[in-house]
Image (cartoon, rainbow, N blue to C red; front, top):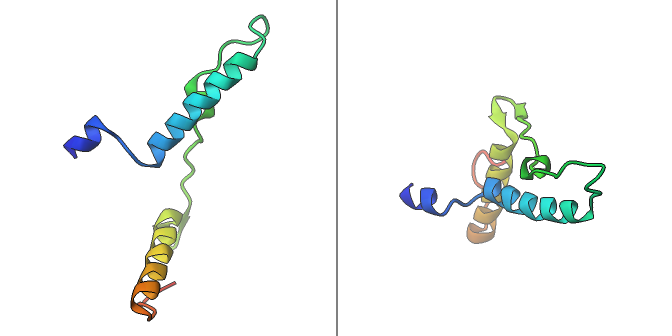
Length: 82
């Protein structure tokens, strides 16, 4: 946890880094007389929470990936696999 506070990682940080680059590129191409400068927040995707059967879609995707990894490693389908 302490290391994460010093060096955050994950998709939120990747979104922030990509948004930083996108805002710099967009600001170099904008007409300064017509538009205000873009902020980083203008390019960060909005979080949309989708729930299905009480679980988030991210949980389902993670479970499917883990099931595939277990299948590739062990050669048999785990119980309760999607």
